[in-house]
Structures are given as structure tokens and as C-alpha cells.
Image 1 (cartoon, one colour):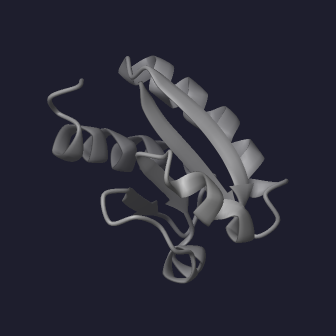
Image 2: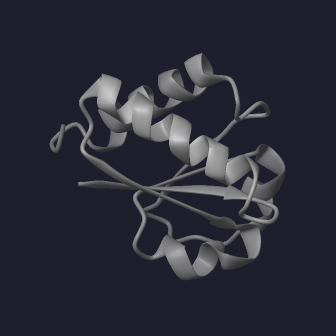
Length: 99
């Protein structure tokens, strides 16, 4: 199971909406995933149990995460097509043996 983490400033708005969108994207891609959301301040606590973090470039530059975690950033996290493309590429590139 792929573990995804959606990160935004407060962990309540953007990351929660992205979490819902990601569940649908994963279903379409056939990716078995657990999707969580949190604030940037909480990200480090979640990151050790995460495969992919999705956030904006600004938060991506500020949050700390383990080297093996894949970071996906997008200026517009509500652009579902872009997020699907980036997630699909990350899964193919980093998790091809699993999916």
C-alpha cells in the first residue's frame, strides 16, 4: 500500500480537499493507497510513515522529510489533471516494482 500525505499550512482546507481528490485519482490509477492530510508543522511526524508528500512549492521547501520520501509539488493543488499526472509519474518512477 502506497502512503500519501497531503500538506498545507493549517492541515484543514487545501490538504483535506486534496486528500479527497487523491483518493479518487488513486482509484482511477488502480493504486492501493492510504491518504492522510496534515499541516506543515505536523508533516515531520507523519513523514517517516509516508511514501509521497504532496504540497505547494513553498511548503515543500520548508518541511523536513526523510530522503527516501518522494516530494510532489504543484502551485495549484486543485488542478486534478496535473496532480494525477504527477502522481502517476512518481509511482512509475519510484514504485514501479510495487505497481
